[in-house]
Length: 331
Image (tube, rainbow, N blue to C red; front, side, top):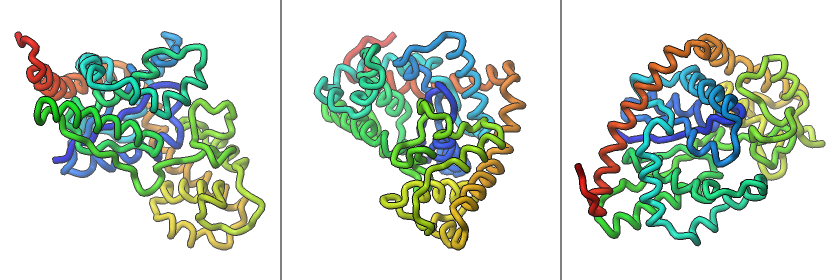
């Protein structure tokens, strides 16, 4: 079996980009009996940006319910909160001692986030990729489904793993990144040259997975396109239309090529309506299940405890393997 590891931060909202680029693919990976899937809420990563405690706590519950609502099965997969498994933090410290400052200084996301949060450029922002490496390496991960913006983090994870293995032998499995063919990067509805982001100040740029259907339709009708009238998939020259076609392809479970063919003859306004309606229908069962689960705190806690137990049973073995290789005294 291949071990699949992926995580999402429980901050802000779950966007349509998160849904299409990440969690929707998780459900498909879980369905493959050859995969051992491990999915986490990366709540340790989240506090690199200041959080209001009560809102943070509420978001963690909400996002855990969202993961279950999308169809993740706690019996079949491991679905847990990162902070419940202390091995993440411990391995991150050990890996820090095998990671070079120059490598962290070159990380693109550190530079970007430092500009966005200039009043709080903390060590967590810089050390984020090492904790991410610990997340992945703790589970002998084969594949990590990621967006294009996370590929650099996969490369540093591989570099760290190979460095450790060159010193101590085969301690860590060296993972590979995996980018889904469709929907790997969903762009802003108002700036289709930029990724859809939960932190976007323009509410019309982002679809929340919990948006009301009328709100979803309104946002798609306002989506930026171009002055042409041709429906074609051309991300370089027709970024807005291409983004809508990517979204529609996922929502209707078709290839982009088939979607383009089906949409010939439509006006841009008609295309926007079709995309909006398809997204509303795609999200409807997900939203209904979330509304059922979010207030079932006892059930969510039971699932989270099961996830912790399953994750920790795997993580503690890998951590011990590394600590034994370094020379630590084992009790």
